[in-house]
Each structure stands twice: as structure tokens, then as C-alpha cells.
Amino acid sequence: MTSSQHHRIDYVEIPAADLEASKRFYAEAFGWEFNDYGPDYAGIRGPGDREAGGLTPHGPQHRGGGPLVLLFSADLDASVAAVEKAGGRVLQGPYAFPGGRRFHFADPAGNELGVWAES
Image (tube, rainbow, N blue to C red; front, side):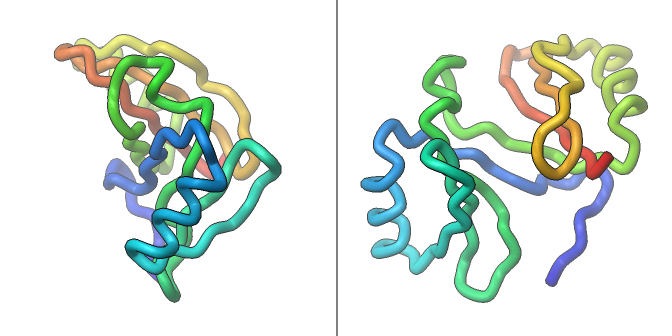
């Protein structure tokens, strides 16, 4: 199992208007397995791998983009400050979610990414 590393791409969320149909597709096409977190979220695991992404009907289609890339942070508040200092714009958060805290930001080109931390 690979551990999370500071500011490495860590998790990707893929929009899935029909969660069950998307799970069937990815399971068949790529052998992915899923951790179900209720009716609106399924964590993605490749065979034998740790969870590396998720399928969500509440994802990027509401932001006008593709999958949401999430970076891991050892210090979320420092990452918020670094994003703002570098010219990014915080769009949401920091906020709590099951497993930690995260925030979303827009880079100067308007791409939205997220950053999460365990606490």
C-alpha cells in the first residue's frame, strides 16, 4: 500500500450521473472495485490497490469541467495560504468530510482542484 505524500496527486473524482451504470462500466472495462458510501458516492479501488478515486453524481458537471483532482496535504491550512499566495482562488472550504478536511481552489487558468488532509 502506498502512503499519501504532501502535494502529490492523491485522489480523482469522476462525475457519474448514474452511479450504478458507471460502477458497472468501470468494473467491466478496468476491473475496478468500489467502496460504497451510501447512494451518492462510490470509492474507486483497482484490484488490490488502495482507494484512489471516487464516482459521484455531485461532481464536476456542476463546475463545468472534468474530473476533480485532489492533492494530499500534511498541513491543510498552510496549503490554503500557499494557494492564495501563489495566485489561486479558494472556492470552497476548508470543510470537514468523512476522513478529514479539504478545500477546493481555482488555479489562475480557472481549473478547479481540491486538497485534503487527514485532520
